[in-house]
Length: 268
Length: 268
DNA sequence: CTCGCCAGTTAACCTATGAAAATGCCGGAA
DNA sequence: TTCCGGCATTTTCATAGGTTAACTGGCGAG
Image (cartoon, rainbow over all chains, first blue to last red; front, side, top):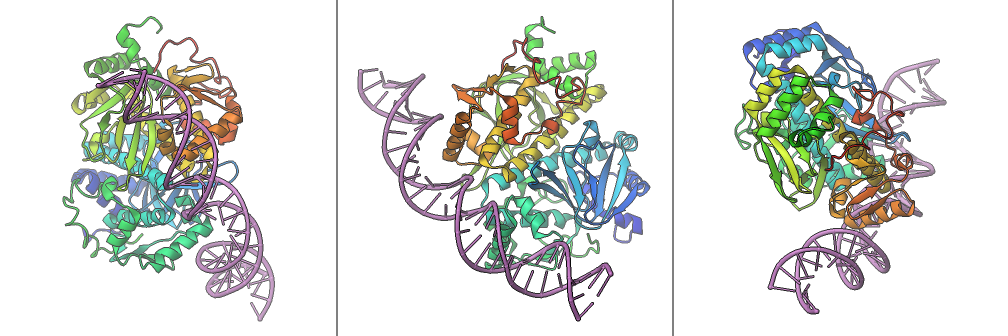
């Protein structure tokens, strides 16, 4: 797995993630990588991949870079409802409904693969584990969305922001995108505000507060969490909803808390 | 469709809803009704069907009554992340993940059908439209969840509550559970507060305000919306995410704004 | 070099919302 | 009947967070 071809490297985050959700057969991996290679795309930062009301006819999988899903009210108020990180799927099965309810915009340069509906459906029919992996992806995404609901509805500002940091960190970890206590964090404070339901000003205050408490460092698009447990406890973060533990590969929460991605060159 | 057997009547909301999402073949309807009959259950109000951390091994479909999905923080703060209304599915594909991230509790007496995983998978394999209907249900549910995110994060109190009323009303309509401008609303103000991310007290204030503005009547578990358009505009409600229009049966938003469920005896 | 723009930061002020506590209503149990 | 507990309501008081408005530093364009 280490000495893969450049293309294999591209699909690495995806394969790794899927394997955690649902172990894939070798053939499944090969078929998936093949399908990904057939539809490679790149986008610059700030590009809309999908706009609310569009209809979509395929599935997009993010190979590298960050995107976010967002919705906007008539008067301009915007809510980022989720981030999409390397290895994650933009819109599995979205083609089943006539229009999509939200927009998807890149936050950074992004590499992604697009698999058109017929190709995707053939792929799903060809391998059971792959089909289940995509379903898992969908179900997991819903779980994350629900956690965002309680984050937006019931947590205080500091908890909200801390929770977001914890979640992102834990979502980057299994795809090898954290380096010790640090990870990329290529998101402006305005976006962060829209993700947590705060005003920019108050978000800034809250970040200062987290810094003052020594819970995070955030500088030059890089987030460092010196004491993850402390941050988690400030956030009332419990990771169950992310299904990182107890699934296929990783059995114990304790056993996996470090040293999973250290040897990996993959960068988002 | 009017003179169905009692059992047909039970499954009516489900079939009707699915037909809107994805028209079902006659065989699909028969197979679905059969599967529902094989696993009928009832529950009283306030019962937990699923508790956060449980593992589930089947799919539950609500035939009548209301439930809600909710999550609770360590310190007791609770967020209702969605309601589950007659005709809707509790947890399609949730069995794919080892544990469930949220609890499901009945708000009223509930009749539901439980289809165990093997039976469910056989059913999905047997009919393409049925499989797609369940997938649609899942995707639609995610869309609703995202709308809740913007509701919790970006709308003001009055808008939140108004939006919730609009959404519930529009979700009850296609299954024949609204009667003119009114529908059942069997939810305490405490639950309403937890669904909108407000305190009970402020929720009450907000309800008073909606009443004073003549936008709603809420009495004895019955909600009346004298001027739906007015309420929608107060809520910044745009129904696209519910996929009520533009899908299978209903083509135009205007054309469907009344007279859809008037002749139907089905009650939740 | 300067202009303009964007992200970040800070301050002053203000209001929407939360918290606590008390009241009244109603229906069920004894 | 009386008591009790759940729910809705109202009031008062406290505060988290929103709004507005500068001011900063960096950086690319000209």
